[in-house]
Image (cartoon, rainbow, N blue to C red; front, side, top):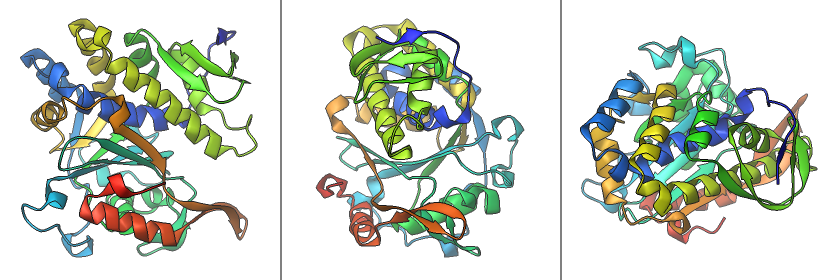
Length: 331
């Protein structure tokens, strides 16, 4: 079991998990969470809505054919930034900072699964107007529109919605769910907490330390990504359990813990989320798939340590994004 020795500091590296939780909770539990008018108002009233999140139309990948399966699918870009408190109505003015977390969530037209792809923040990729650079630098160079354009170029598909999330509600969300059980691959210590190998129950402070740690592992960010996915699976299992879905109080508390820390495009509203949640009412934890964009490991570019994308596998991935066939992709 994890032992609490000291309060873990709130650092931005835990945000990668919170980003996914924020959107996954309102999507996967959306039908139940937004059944009541009050919760719908809570979602719409609590989040920050911004415009100007997409690149110029001429710079974007070709739109899918009307009424095609690819058009019916939804792809959502999830970002973490430490500038949440400074965001006003112009999200494209978020410059000078780098995104700590980048995830692409794809929901197929059939609404029978969710695919969440993590992008290592040090991926060495082309950024329009800046040559090759680490992918998380796109936010610093040109704000959210440039980040959206960079990711769209990487997957050769359009992003339908964008969510920028701060992680300060992370502990409250975890505790609102009554704790989360994770299955740890390794025993390690981090942030004043000890984690054993195997299943264990975590509260909010422990979970933040669990998903943040990388120095304890020989492969650093790669194991941290696996731990984050293990935690997400634990949260989803809790969210989709009978105890949660039949508890209006737990659902309400969880939604209210998330929405103050969400900044989204104007189309990501309660109507969209509620409709999507209802369409996905039969999705269970086994239907939610996590993977990391294909890479060839790390290398150096000048004095920078970078992650090398596996462009051959990315070409394959692009085809599946374009055709809404991610179920055929084998990470």
